[in-house]
Length: 283
Image (tube, rainbow, N blue to C red; front, side):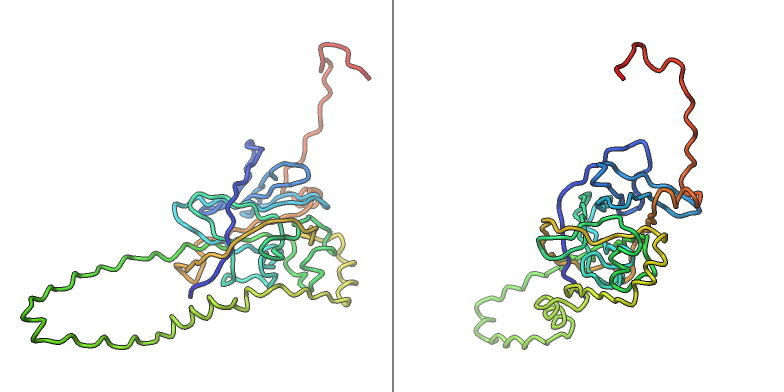
């Protein structure tokens, strides 16, 4: 089924090349802390990938297409679709990347021209918890789809009739085109957005607040930050398969929580140096 999807086209730059910064095969997924201005290192532990976030810091999700063809990336943050705000599902809309192109997703999509910043937040202040979806806080996911290949039709040249044939045989009228249900369905989807592309509805439940406070020391989440400009356009994209060609999963939490779980390496104590400088510095 033909789906209208959103496309971005600006490059991401990452600073720290000494650590593993991205995960993925068809698409590189990395996270950049916009306040500390650094790419967050990726740690592998028990077959999973993790990053350590700083509460209150804005961040962006950077996607880089490593393939030589268009791909579509359905982005999930805390199991919420970052474009529609719906419970994340593979069949939903995503971002389309040109071959070898990069995209920085700055936040929750609010319109064709604005987003609400991704912000590392306490569990109780995460967007997923505040909208009644507390079960999958602390994970970023990307479902990657290849574009359906279009093969050119081979058209045979029409035979050329001589004058006598044209006088003897009158041309038959062309049959009326049959209406294919698939074409009709695509026409409707192009004219109006599907339910999965509808504007997100914020569902705040006061009954969830005691539960959120009780789990304040739970996993780090992603909040709904300030709005800023980020323009996009609609493009056509038909998936080659109903299932993703790749699913990328990246977990995140505070440094202290990951350290306690053995995900990040324990920092070595600093050894004092007797001669750290050659001259006497100012106090």
